[in-house]
Image (cartoon, rainbow, N blue to C red; front, side, top):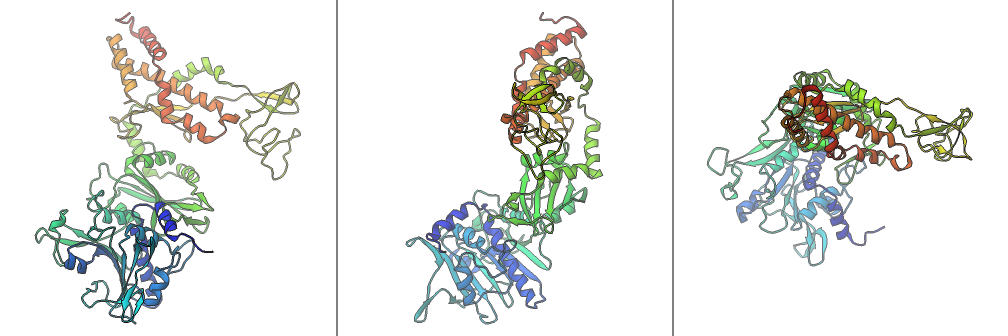
Length: 604
């Protein structure tokens, strides 16, 4: 099999990759080169350095990003075989290791002017170089040809003027990123913060390989006109200062600054958790100190969710308060889960499916560390979360029959004739037995876990009976920024959210609609206390949201509501916000209650 249009395939695959993936791919290639050198008996310390090519700086004034390692290096044969072929690698190529395509796709498309490979080996101590580039005239990617003597070849001996990087004492490789234009500064990304490269590497790696240092050139001044022309200018020695910053990896910073940390052993993974101090501000742009949830695989971080997405994950883990201080990473046990990275190295898959986050959520909630529980308890200690349970239950009894949508099941002793399909579980015969190995979706009684909804009364149906269920009313909890039970940005301008795992509705006390109800009620009953107004508003809103949740839950299991995603949409924060927007009936009930407590309204 051959590829008919290699250029299209390369550029199409690059579209699936994250903006910084070329940094990851080239860094990982350097780690692999050092590992291979050790496998050959080398005992030294590995070094991977992201710098600029100072030869280019001094000859042209342009700053081109360069990565250097003191690994095995590449000779002419390796250059032609591994650089000029897609899905070819100097390392072990496998689904769980090197794919052999990452750097060529991501860095090649990002730098059509060229990736200049400079390499030193024992056989070529003076070095050779080669350039992977895009020939725009021919619209192809490949190694540039150089005239060496009377012939053309894909590599050439190194010019004696080229400075050998200080990190390489014997063998090693440097790759220079030439960018999209001749004068492009490839060290910088104009749309990103100044220390983007340092931050990215600290965030990409959970921890770094043993006996290998990863460093990045850090310039003192953001103004490129003040950058030095040699690597020897030190920090503090004029505007042109710089230094090499050592990359530590995310685990280093979390363990250094965490107030509490620990490990929870799950059935098929290891969960690392950290509680950071409130208002931590120590990163200096070197790492992200905000709440995160992600996965660890081969020392790298995958599927990292930040801020709003991380908050949603924290709720699934059972962390309802203070989640802006918590960081959670889960490391799958590869002896129990066949985990592989996708081609873009952005997500992890288990037999082609996503990681079992739902299972991990449940196991963590059942084994939540004491320190996290105590943190949440301390936040709740001084907060008024609203205790309206008894009044909600009392009022619910008056209307609960309206939420009992008729459901039937087939049973030999039933006095009704019913027909239809009961979704969920394996089929149960009328004699109580189930066929072996079935997961029935045909006409039958459904399994024990079925939501017995689809069966309906039919004159020609089978014996059946009406099913009734006890109501499991959700708990309502009021949260606010002032009391520390809600973070800024969480449920912002939303009424509430519902947690199915905890069967709890978290209601945003700061929502402007509720503030409007409190203000209007206070104006109508100025002699009512703030407590009475707040309690009346929150009791009726609690009931209104309870009705909304219970109404949606009563629908689940029918053919049109059997999809969990559909139920989730109907119970989303946006849907619950819509549920409280009608205010006429609610406001009338609030006024009636206040009137019974403090007397007639001043507006009546």
